[in-house]
Amino acid sequence: MATIDEELGQLERDIRQLKIEYDQFFGGGRKRPPTEIEWRIDLLVKRYAERGGELKFAQRFRFNNLSQTYAKYKDIFRKKTAAKEEGKVQRHFGAAAKEIEAARRKNEEEEHAHEPKAFRMTCSEPERETEKVEQLYQAFLQAKQQAGEHTGKLSRSSFNEFVLKKTKELQKQKNCKDVEYVVETVEGQVKLKALVKS
Image: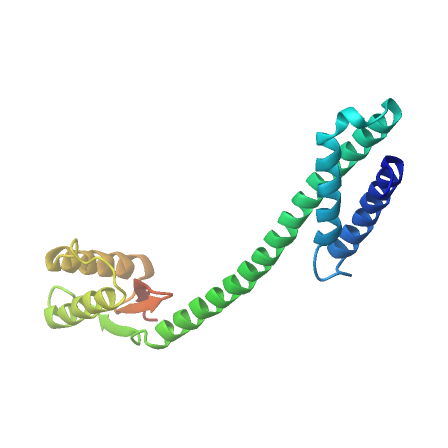
């Protein structure tokens, strides 16, 4: 049977070897952590912790130093192992996030492909061209509904008022007769533009 000094010597070599193998594991040179050596060290440390009274002063001093070194290493290894595993998860998240992003982009592109073509209408006297203004209102309302926008606040009278006011404003500003109204959906948002016909 090995003497206490021989076992302590073995313990010291095992702790040194454990560090080497853990470094290889974290560096990617080993597939699995060195659990066998760790198990062997655990047994010895436990045994000598229980049999402390049998050790001479120098042996106890040596054992305490070794067990402290081992505890310190173990803590480092545990943190590094957790970080390594989290790294795997993060990489997975990264890949999953890319897939989600790609799918989202594809959906957006598809949505844009289905976006209604811009509706255009030209008017010079909205107060007389009620039919045209009505068509513009319906096109605007429909585009908003298709885009999933809230239309509860839309009212025909306020819309007519807006068109009338905007038309007169632009005719005065730009000294023109016709104003073109465009209803278009840009990136899922419905826009109503008033353009001057030169």
